Image (cartoon, rainbow, N blue to C red; front, side, top):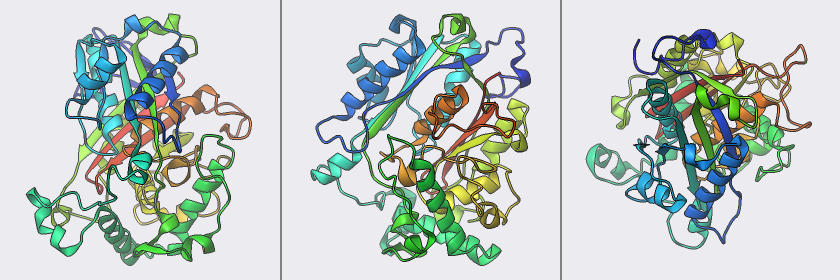
Length: 402
């Protein structure tokens, strides 16, 4: 088998390979936390995830972190009082946490670690408000990006170009893109942790201030503070868990481009590769998935990722997101916490996707926002798909109750 394919369909154990479960998940304080540091949020999330698992911290022998400091996993592990023997800090933008999950699952399955803690925390909003960072999204002028920077190619401009191409090629409309924002806000309405919970309309999205054509303000993710943590463990620890396990059934990773001129097709994201790999390794089809948590820094990301994961055909994403399909009680609930468009977006949001997926599969989302299948049962399968850069990277993880 190739890397990342070691959790076979049905979780049947094969010689020398261990199944991997999500043991604990948690959020730190979030939204607006002006008095906290990123280290504070890391620690809050880590403690809460460990408490959620019911395990003792002594079981943790693996650690993954990214986005903070030059030596992220070393600095944060020291702050948390951990001395892991397996570490990873692979950083590929918003897809980082799905990629790190894939790495951690392989390490646990192979016996290189027994329990890996993934933790993230950021005070992006507080730092900007306090003048400790800028909102510059040009990503520097060295390396390949130096050839685009003189033309004002910010991150949002790259996404806007891709969206315009999809609109031109497939007839996708602004109203369809706006539907993604409207439904994300509706999903956030019952989430007490979401920053923005008031309903919005398509007209309000379309009439907002222009940020980068075709994106008005409400097409874009919010800026927040926040952190979260996920604890992955070998099947040996499952009998000791405080809650039923959620199994990692399969994962896939892929990278695409940095320079826009090297992107073969603006309407295809690397999720087309990572998703295909994840579903194949999990032994499930997109049609079997009960809910999807998708990186949504901009509305177009949700639409094109749904296409690339195979929930609809290429070019049909616009029609697919209409009619309330993405709502909690829709045909395919997507970003059930409100996503980056409404709930939180402190930076590399990919780990939040996994937290929400696990809570939904456990049935812990709460009466007003818990997803149920048409037969009334709790969801059985979920997918979390993160995107990094400007469709530069992708990581997809399939999770299941059984």
